[in-house]
Each structure stands twice: as structure tokens, then as C-alpha cells.
Image (cartoon, rainbow, N blue to C red; front, side, top):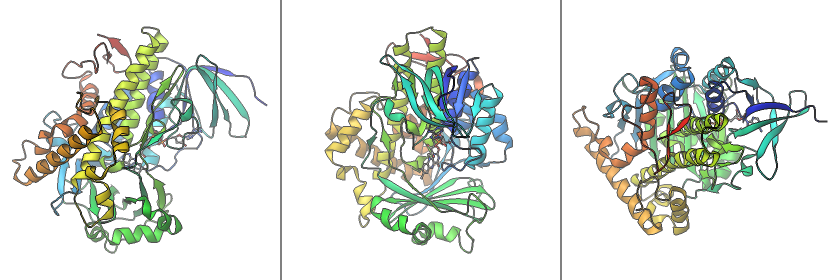
Length: 493
Ligand code: FAD
């Protein structure tokens, strides 16, 4: 039996970083927001390594940067990679970006149960009606638009609520994303599986890189090594789907075996026991298939975070894309509720920018995989751009449509392939110049693709710190919109 329907301006489904960000950014403009989360927080989630734009950009706009800063998370100055031609690890440091001076050139490694709870509590504090143990079942819609959702409450009661906008931020297991743009398009190139768990300690990289994520390529794929606390390290293996059966049958043995076959990581864990505290006492498995959608909105509904798209975890882009996409959606919603601009224009702006950002990371990551060379390994051979079939490249061209590259050079699969290989060799050369670098300029940022991939993040950070971008923000497309001073709405130029 359905009780009376409640009314809100916006309903957000899911209380992860995407949902908290969207809900908070809308509530900050005084609107009535309901957030429904199926679990009770704190809850476990993977995705522990953040990028600076989330911490200093989005968290600042949401008013939670200081609290995150006080939480004792491990500062992360960048990434250390055993990746590419050279067997020696190299550093990717945020600080060496010419535009990112201290004090924003770092991020954190976070226990997601704590980080996500801080964001959700902050949403509550600014007035979001947050309800946990509430599982959304479906959306309410008519021919014109989506009008609300129904859900099951803590006692199993069926409820419904209506709103001008529904935000699907319910993550990779979303039950309602199909209401927008149909099925997901999966990437063949990134069809990986991850198996991960925790150690009660582990050696640290030499200072000042002791908070870095360490990513090490090995025969079967690559491993992450994330220092969460002095007595806690997150270690995960990302391997091809041909390993799925073995991993699913015995995750712990598979995980330990993969770690043992990568000397760089194995050595850091010598004599260190597996973690025994909950929730870190388990070894978990996730297919980390990468996917995107043909549309990210329809009248009355938007998709953000993993509900919308996901791309391979090696660059730690998940939480960035989730919170950035949520902020873009909140701008469109705030402007839509204010009635200042035409709804199509507002949500096309959200979609174009989100797709652009996702496309940049996707494009960069294909090249990043291509850059690692290991002709003996099936995993790495299959991830050479030259071995990618034209259907995959075509799907990719559809996805970015020339937007990511800012030009029309991605005209067809042939050109796309050539471009990606060129980027890969540029990256490889930039990494090769690292040992000779004077420490003042970062050779990695001489690569156009690296500059591009961090551009939006940089604008976000600068907005967070200085209240607006240092350089005047220009529209992404002719006639496009730009963010308002406080970052919470769109304005026409
Ligand atoms: P989530 O964090 O998944 O939150 C969704 C929420 O919605 C959940 O709390 C869920 O309980 C709730 N929900 C689901 N269904 C319903 C429903 N029907 N009703 C109500 N609530 C519902 N990202 C990084 O930034 N750095 C990393 O190092 C990183 N490593 C990764 C490693 C792996 C192997 C994988 C697979 C991903 C990794 N990611 C990483 C990505 C990261 O996990 C996600 O991108 C991020 O968690 C997305 O946030 P979200 O808010 O969209 O979704």
C-alpha cells in the first residue's frame, strides 16, 4: 500500500560522493532536497585515492574542505608508477603542474566509509532531508517527464515522492539508469576485473612520496598500493577477464598469488599480515568494466557518478568524475528551478561538459595503457591500440565525437587509432625525460594530453581557492554557458 506522496524540488538517489555533492549544491541554493540511500552509513566502498580537484574544488564549494582536512586522511602528493619502458618507478607529482602552486597540489587517500559519511553529514547539515535504509525501486514518469520515485522504507513500507528533478547517483548497480538513454555501452578495451583487500601496514615509499598511490604493471595486469594509514594499506590487482573464473572461485588465493607475481609490490609487504579489522578483513571482487551512456539526461532526470559512466581506475578519476558530474548537474538544476534559462539548454550544457571530461580521461587512459609495453604478456598485447578492433574505436569516436580533443581530428576509427598511438609515444617520451628534469618544470605537463586531462580539475581547484577561475572561463562550445561566481549555477555569457 502506498502512503501519501511527498513533494520536493529535487530527489537524489544514492548517498555516495556523487549524491552528496548534487544534494548539497542544490540545498545550498535553498531548495528542498530529499536524498534516499539504501544502506546505513558508514558503509564500505572502493575508490580510495582522490584527485586535488575533489578536495580543494568540490569539497570547498560544498563547505566541507576543512572538515576533510581535519579527518586525518593520508595526504597524497601524486602517483608513483612502475609503468612503461623503464623498469624504474617514476613519479607523477601534482605540485609540478605549472598552474597548481601549493597549497592545493595534494589530495588524500581516504577510507571511503569515513569520507562518504563526512559528505553525507554535511548534506544533512545544509538542510538535505537524508533518509538511510531507503531503497529506490523505480521512477514515476509520464510522457512529458520524470516526476518522482518510489522506494521501500526501513520497515519495508512502500513510499513515493515527487519532485521537479530526480538525480540518479546510485552508483554502478543503479536500477534506474535505464530510464535515461537506455542501456550502457561497455568498452572492450577496459574489460577488466579487480580483486582487492588490505594489509595491516606495509613499507612506504621514501618521503615526500610516502602518501602516493603506487601503481605497478606486471605480466597479468597491474596492482595498486594505497597507503591509507600507517597500519593499513589497500592493495588491489586489475587483470583481464580471462582470470574471472579463478578469482571468483577463490578470491583470497588469487589475490595473494597476483601480489606474489609482482616483485615491486610483494617486497613492500614482506612479513606484513593481512588486516583483520572490519570492513578491511575481506577480499573483494569487482568487475571494473568501463561504460558510458548515449544520453545523461531526459526531462526531469539526470545521471551522475557511476550511475552515468565509469572509466578504468588507474588514474584515480572515479570520485573526481562523480563529484564533478554532480556539480554540473546541480548547476543545471539550480538554474532550472530558478527558471532563468531554457531547460534543454541547461541540461545540454551539463551533458556536453560531463561527456567532455569523461572523454578526456577515457582517451588519456587508452593511451596510458598503450604506453606500457610487454610483448610476452597477453594482457598488455591486447591493450595496444594497434590491436583494438575498429568497432571499439568507432564506439570511442562516437563517445568523444572530436569534443575531447577540441578539434575534428577524431573523424573516424583510423584517425582515432593513429592519434591515440601518437599520444602514447608522447607520454612515453615525457616519462623518459623525467630523470633529467630540473624539478622546476614537470616534463609530464609538456604533454598536451596530460595538460588537457587535468584542465577542468585545475579550473575547479582555482575556483575553490580564489572564488573563481584565475583565467576567465570560456564556454566549452559556441553559445555554451559558464559557471556563476559561486560555482552553483550557469550563466549565459
Ligand atoms: P557510489 O559511491 O557507489 O555510491 C552510490 C550509493 O547509492 C551507494 O551508497 C549505494 O548504497 C546507493 N544506492 C544504490 N542503489 C540504490 C537504490 N536503489 N536506492 C537508494 N540508494 C541506492 N575512484 C577513485 O576516485 N579513486 C580510486 O582509487 C578508485 N579505485 C577504484 C578501484 C576499482 C576496482 C573500482 C571498481 C572503482 C574505483 N574507483 C576509484 C571508482 C569509485 O569507486 C567510483 O567512481 C565512486 O565510488 C563513484 O561514486 P558514486 O557516488 O557515483 O557511487
